[in-house]
Every structure is written in structure tokens, then in C-alpha cells.
Image (cartoon, rainbow, N blue to C red; front, side, top):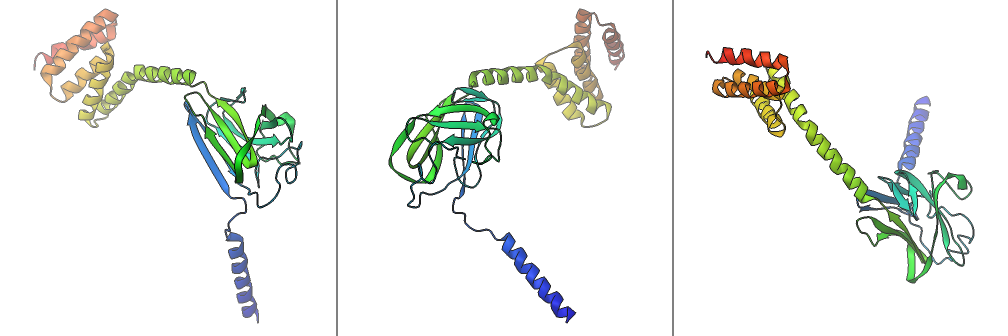
Length: 281
């Protein structure tokens, strides 16, 4: 009897687990739309309800009431960098898009920090941006609610919305010139310091008896970028270790010259000693 109960329990548990794990098509399927503007990625994540022979605005979605601008959960907008939405500065991050449909005039669109915002939990104090958007009538009925991007150029684009016979857009702007300038400055700064990285990598291989040919390659790259008494000295040591006596001697003399110009006594002495020693080979 207990054995039969155990078997029945396991069968029931398996059936329940299978039911819970089952995935079915949703009445309002999930969708994403992404567009890069300048150096900024803007993504809208939402569910797409259908009209289904209903009156949407003014009935299913009452005029003058806050709406999550989609089905299931609130529609989300993701900004990879700071941007302006409807002319208002919004920091990089993820936000919900809430709106208030209006029978006449403009709709109100809210960019809100509450990602779980619903019609009953929406709080205006959580808005980071509010905008009024001009409503347009679509030429044809839009069955499934749709977001897309239009008028994309280097620094701006429009986020478009349409459902039933209603459409609106809201401008998104980015300061791509400032971001590009920062990237240029960063790349230049990284290039300026790269010769130090190549030198330290070469010196590490030399001091730890690792790949000396790779050390030679890195050391030459460092010197080619910016020759100083200390990275030229590293190159001379690697050349000497590889048995490149003629090259090592010439490089040591170059490092000595740079050391004298810098008036840096430790390297003047080290180079002088190496030149004397390597000249005897």
C-alpha cells in the first residue's frame, strides 16, 4: 500500500512540475527594439497587446488615467549613456515608460525610476522626465501595439508609438560630440602610457627568464613609441641576453646619452659599466 502511495505521489509531483515548467504563447507577446544613436544604445522592452475588436483609448484605457504603456508589466527603456528624452536630461540606466492618454490635445509621457510601476502604484515623484507628446491619427489601424525608432541621425532620433488609430513620438537626443571627444582623449592617454606597459612587460620576461623574443618585441615597441633612458636601457639588456652584442652596445650608448641629458646618475653609471663590460666581448 505504501509503495503504491509513493508511486502515486511521485507521478503527481512529476505532473505538477511539468505543468509549472510548461511555456505557452502569451496573449501579449514580449518584444524588444534597439537603436544606436551617436554612441548611445537605446532599447525599449515591452509586451504587445492587440486591439482584438476592442475600443482601446477612452474605453479599455481610460482618458486622463495613468497607463503602463503596454501589457503585463510596464514598458522599459534602457539608456547606455546619459541622454535627453523630450528635452530633459536622463542619466544612463533603465526606466519605466508610463503615460496618460488624453481624448484631446497632447498625451503625457513619464520616464519613471520604478521598474515595477503599475496603474495603481505609479508615483509622480519617481519621474525623472515628463513630456507632452502630440497625438496623431494613423492611416490604418495598428493591431499590435508597436514601438520603433525614426529620424535617426548622429545625435538624435524619435521614439515612435502606435496602437489602434493613435500614434505619437518623443525626441531622444545625445551629446555624441562630447562623448566622442572623451573617447579620443582616452585613446590618446592610453597610447601615451602604452610604452610604459610594453616596457614593464618586456622587463618582466627578462627578469623571469620567460620568452625573450617576445620581450625584445615589446621593448622595441616601447622605444619606438617614446624613447627614454630607462626603456632604452631595458632594450640593451634584452639584446645582450640574446647575444646581440653589437646591437646591445649601440643601444647602451643611446641610453647613456639620454641619461646624461636627464642628468640621472644611476642610469649613467649602469650604462657606463655595461658599455665597458660589453666592449670587451
